[in-house]
Image 1 (tube, one colour):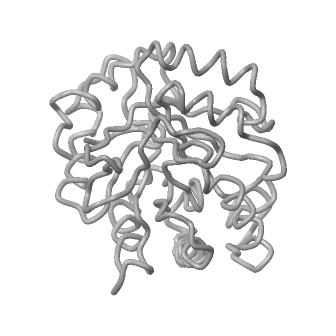
Image 2 (cartoon, one colour; image 1 turned 90 degrees about the vertical axis):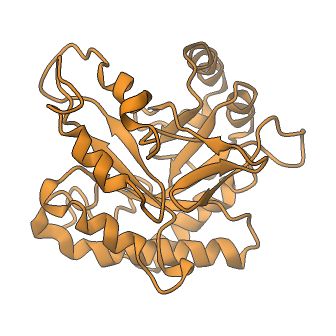
Image 3 (spheres, helix red, strand yellow; image 1 turned 30 degrees about the vertical axis):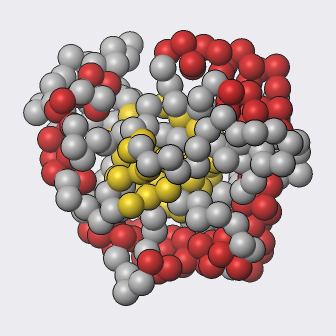
Length: 274
């Protein structure tokens, strides 16, 4: 199923309530053998690290559990802060975390960065985030970038995204960490689709390809339908693929208020099986 998000818990201090997440072909699976379907929310309103605020985490986790969410996506964290309380709170609520490795100063390409870059400083910063979170079993996956490519004109950034994924998978393995999935979250740019996902998913061996591909889709606006929104074409791009593809963000930037009609399609029969 085209989906939305996933999470993990601190090893060593307590028995984890959640199994770890891994990929096999086009699906996510838990370590106890069940297929994992993502149902979640983007979780970062401000630049402050949301996983270093235990009181707020407790309030939000309770509401998310009531709604049936099993995942949150977090965009930026402070690797030097303590995350034990929040990670355990979300673990107890049955919620996984998908975490971006970049920080506000380590974008591959973004505001004020004219050309893509991937260097040793960024590698070390990404590694610090991975070091801080790898022990949490409800850490479901890492993103090496978010909407790095926003137009066909900056598609030259794609090799940098792929290099970041390759290097962070190598870093993960060199440290002896578990096989945490590493992927990318893409802007929904029709002129790049599906070439970008094909490029990031290909490789002569698993170490060269990303483990999953997230799509930030803003096509379903107002009282649309599965067909009118274009979601049926997004589903086709995800069908019978070699890595999992899911919605890492959904919504609409032009029509308000949001009615959430897209969720019935995403989590229902229209998109089952992909």
